[in-house]
Length: 58
Image 1 (tube, helix red, strand yellow):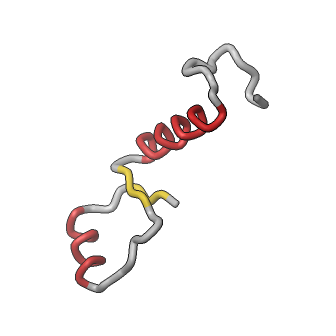
Image 2 (cartoon, rainbow, N blue to C red):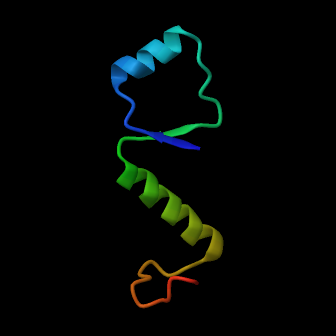
C-alpha cells in the first residue's frame, strides 16, 4: 500500500500517536507513487521502458 500527500505535521502526529506504518510506503505525489509502481512492474515483468507503442492489454 502506498499513501501520498501526508504533510510533515500529520506524519509527526501519527508517530506521536503510535500509529504503525509497517508495510506502508509513502510518496510525495500520486504521480511519484504511480512511477514507482510502474517501475516495479517493469522490473518484475522485464518490460521495455517505453510502452507507448505497445497495446494496453500487455
